[in-house]
Image (cartoon, rainbow, N blue to C red; front, top):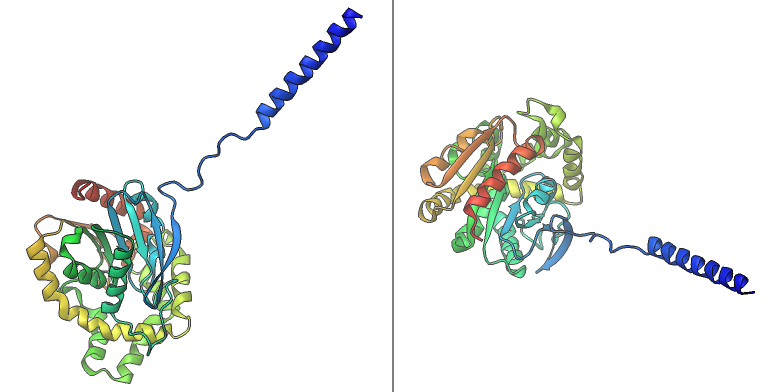
Length: 324
């Protein structure tokens, strides 16, 4: 009887130990967080009547970097750069009104101008509690960024300029039909610019000047064109084409800002760009002392073809210029 009891106790102890081991094996360990500092989040913010879409990543306590996209794209152009910068910086990339996922009121209720785009971004930055920031500007993002810098020069810690113009020298052959519209403002000149709003033209913006077109994702132009074709976006873009003349008139004021405040600046430029050729990059040398100019063998959208190289240059520049 004692033998049976001992055997029974041993069996029970064995079963108990087995169950404990099984429980230990099946109890989930603490899962790694789904969101870390390099994870991009997609958010919206109402600013007056504009439903602003933006991408955000990085530690909010880190120095801020504001990314301002060009035409005809949106913050999607920064999709690969954001996680890289977010390793050390708080990154914000809004879609400007008239682009991407941002929703603004109809024409007639909202004036689609570069000044109004800058006002929305300025209010967005304030609402996020950002007191100072570096700016990465490209194409349309440049005149938006220039207005921010003119309004709050003390807030801008550094500039990264990618094929973003601030000089008359940068407006060459491509701009001839635009200048005609600025001069006469006629319906005929306006309609002539509609040629830049079709898929073939959008795709050309990505592929021209690129020695290796296999580096260009065809998705980029398709995504941009989807938004260009929505609602009254055709007319909105033609409105912005006409308003661009005010950016040119602002160039002397922007250049005076460069000379007075001397923001540390990195110019990364697609050397083969026909929209903003290198003649628009060179004049920065005359106004800025703390300046690096780097040309890459690409066209208008070098983030598509030279993304890793651009990211390395930008990270190295910010690490040595942005205060922490």
